[in-house]
Image 1 (tube, one colour):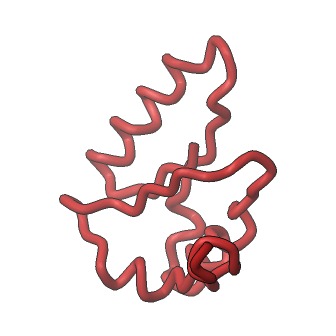
Image 2 (cartoon, helix red, strand yellow; image 1 turned 180 degrees about the vertical axis):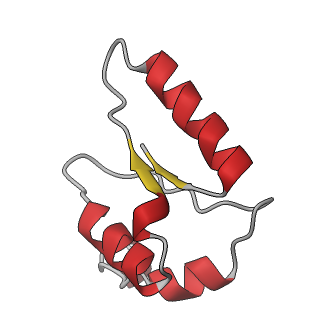
Length: 82
């Protein structure tokens, strides 16, 4: 198997952020056990968005809160971390 499939790669959130915009959000599909929350919160601090970041659980029964958070994010420019 090629080494690209078995070696872990460093994720540069600054580079990903610079390539994103309101029409092209950052979306991560994570493997089990992955937790990028600390890295995302650090990026939010550096971009002065920590106070405009909404964190919501994706657990059962959370749908209404998630939809509301996304609406607030769209209207007011908040970051949404699900």
